[in-house]
Image 1: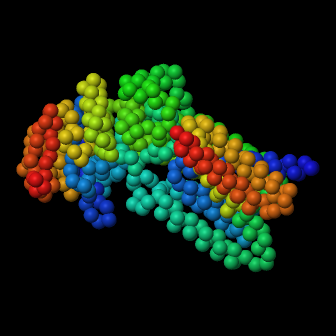
Image 2: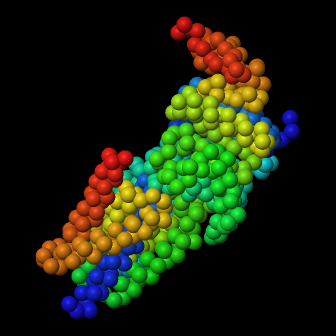
Image 3: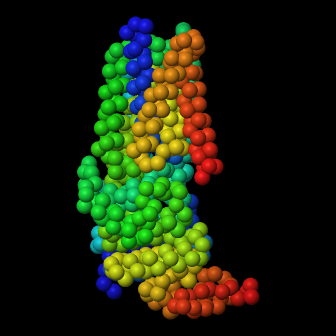
Length: 266
Length: 265
């Protein structure tokens, strides 16, 4: 095994850990659609960057930033439509824009299709540095705003009514969420990133007691799903993205079964 | 009437072209216990949400501590609301998250502390004292989701009280509880009001759940204030019959007022 193998392993571990941590808040706020909306915005951004021949880093960052800010306008108790309905509409719009971009492309579309499943095997050192930096930025944010994020997780309505700076922290969270999804997208892929956000966090919420243990478990589950999925794909010569998705779903299934068994025993 | 700690004037909330709340004038003075009752869809929850700034009315002014909420920036409004204790209905929070009871009660200190600051020993002393005061010490490390409905309400009250609130807003705090828990919860609220002199605005479906310290009742019907005054005046059969559209008899038992639908007798 050469250094590239370890680089890929490290990239997978960082992507899995940061999306696992992000998932704690996205799943906890009962809005997993946020993840899929922003990841598809980032995907649309990448496609239009390729189409316009500009640096493919800026497109997803700009698109995901715009979508994060738009999603921030959906306020609990104040918006006249349900937040999840608004997200579903937004998701469909992003999907439409993405496929319009794909349709406008000429020549080979393999690069674009790679965005759906990601290409962990084509990872570069520079991209690993970027996802690590953004992952660490999110960790710092989660530590600094820990008490506010907990209040938001439990209820944005109560947080807002009782004087927590809910909109400020929520918008900051969405902006970081957009950036993390945008930088991880080329590695993890638009479809796979959604499973890495939801499955590890949902698994952690099944079996943990206390917020800190949820954070640790979800981060580790995300990391393990990415690394184990990659190893399975490497040794059995299977598609990497598909293996990671299946491993993360198995992690959730095991956690849910464990909780069900524990409930029966009690 | 002097300007209260909470005042609403000419407030109107419209939804899809329909007026769902219209309050001409309502003042809540410091230390008052106000009960809000009314039929389903009368606008009780909307009124409470307007009072704490969660819903911005289409017309009129809402003043908290003498300051117009509409004129404040989001940041200043948040600072003003630091001492509002708010307990909504269960649909407004995620009870399925594995927060421990202590973590949940600690959330009450979030707005009191500055952004980026951490809870210190003094905060945890306040948190633990409220957990103990509400008789939840044994449940401290249990998850909120594993508690009974009554214990969850107690935990939410403890959370609100750690904020050191000046005003407590409760939206049907006894819904989905058995009769014993209903009275336990209202007794706790009554005791807190007596001891801390905190202003309380409580929405209730059942007149029997309004504690004896509740001197004033606001009766809503289809978004309008049908009656606002002394509990003896508002909880009169003739007044309630206008809102509930049925024949009502009021029964007074052990200091509480029960409504009986005479059409069903």
